[in-house]
Amino acid sequence: MSVRWGMVVDLRRCIGCHACQVACKAEMRTPLGVYRNWVKVVQKGRYPNVSLSFLPALCNNCENPICVRNCPTQATFRREDGIVMQDPHRCIGCKYCIASCPYDVRYLDPLKRVVQKCTWCHHRVDVGLEPACVNACPTRALIFGDINDPESEISKVLAANAVQVLKPERDTLPHVFYIGADMVAMRTYGGAEERVEVDWVRWWLAKLGILRPRAQAGE
Amino acid sequence: MEQGVQVLYNVAHEPPLGVWIAVYFYFTGLSAGSFILSTLAYGFGLKKYKPIGFIGVVLATVLLVLAPLNLIIDLGRPERFWHLFPYLNIKSPVTWGSFLLTIYPINCLIYGYFMHRGNDKWTKITGLIGIPLAISVHGYTGFILALSKARALWNTAVMPILFLVSAMVSGIALMILVVAIRRLFAPPEERAQYHEIMVDLGRILAAAILADLFLIFSDVLVLLTADTEAREAALLILTLDFSPIFLGVELLLGSLVPLTILALPDFNRRMGWISLAAVLVMIGIFAMRYIMVIGGQSLPLS
Image 1 (cartoon, rainbow over the protein chains, first blue to last red):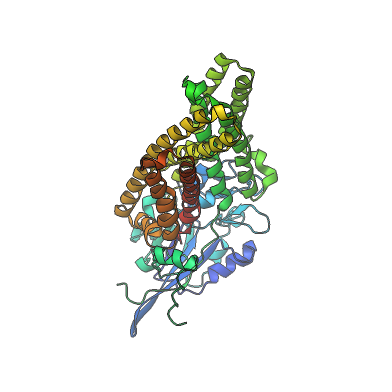
Image 2: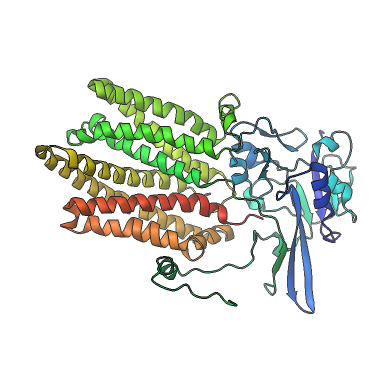
């Protein structure tokens, strides 16, 4: 059977050191402010029962990628081995793929003005090396390999453990599999974890200068 | 379970689509609406609406030339826009758009040309060809949002029809304003005719607003009772950041106030009040486009 690359993120081993994130920055030289992978860190509980949950995020190199379906210039495409590629010369920067991706792992390169993403370091994989993040992980929490090869480490790990993917309901068939991911880390927050309710009548009255804006707590 | 949850580190990339995209949706909507009104006389033979036929197609064409400029401005690499044609991907709604946005204005020009020359037969044919094109050119923008499945506010089946109905609403409102302006400069004996058209358009506008309100109601109600992300999207416009503009501008100012004006006897025959309703409706529909594009992307994905 042909090669199908996949990745396992074993959160029982992850210590949240961000080495994968740093390795990716060094390997891909991504500009300031954008990331091809990152480690989300969420704290939960109250003293003395507290813990940290980590969630390394990267492109899921989906089997049914919505970005590929929606790209109007075929700048993003899926290779036979499952890697979802991005052609920077073909891309026009319409950003529709970013709008379509449920995982927020695509970004507009602020310098080249085209979309970029994690490609599982295809330049390394093609010469027989592991992706930079996998290579850098000190606890071997990231496992990369051919899921079609029954003898590969990843196949054995996938067969022996309970695994899950992010947002399976989006029907993208992700190929980054998580072991032991925490619910509070998998939930989406963006920047903030608190939602602030807005009283829309007051909001407008304050905006129009009829009402003085209510002082924020702590001001 | 929820005790003391605090996000210590996370990455959220910038929202990809800017306000230009909202303006683009607004312009295509106005264009489609104006075009369909222009075919009332020349496509369907409703003689009464003849005075708005030509101005309708001029508006439709101008707006549809301006609309794609917004798209090109929003591109990261505007000079590569031509990649849309040789490297097209037929599965992508953006590709559908690159063809519709080319064919539709050409058809508008031909339709306008025949109307100007007084060739009734070909005006009718090109007008009738234009109707499905006008519907597609705005309907596909609804599919652009609905088919980018990441965003809960967009990923609903009601989106394309909601876009079409709101296009009619804003198109009728624009036409009312155009008729009001033309009436000012018309010779006195023609003014009564423009007044009649305005009152009629006001009635159609009221019906279109009602249809639009029903679709919004149905959208929000289903979002509230679907999955977690959908509920977040509904709360975003009902109680969170986008509620002042949704409840205040889109619903109250842009729908309920104009609907009241157009429903009250006496008010709905006065030029000033009908024009005011039309202005409010145009503001309200822009607010709807803005909430959809900007609000839809403000929901976190990571």
